[in-house]
Image 1 (cartoon, rainbow, N blue to C red):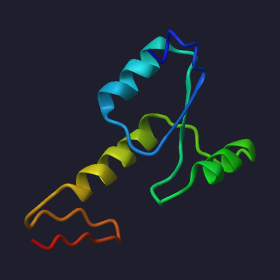
Image 2 (tube, rainbow, N blue to C red):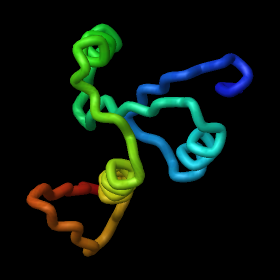
Image 3 (tube, rainbow, N blue to C red):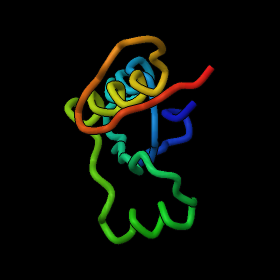
Length: 89
């Protein structure tokens, strides 16, 4: 769908590895990361136009996946990296 509509830029916050690989396969689509914080569409577009959004590559994608998994991990699994997530059941 993205390819058919001639999209050349995608701004995302979280994305699985499979859609990421698919978009990379098509080529010609630039992927940008909006960061992990809550952000409005206006703020995202302003940051984009100011050149403040990082271009997504494999290294940034690995961080996004790690961040996503750390939020969905339950039990005694620790991710470190200076930020902790607590789940209360």
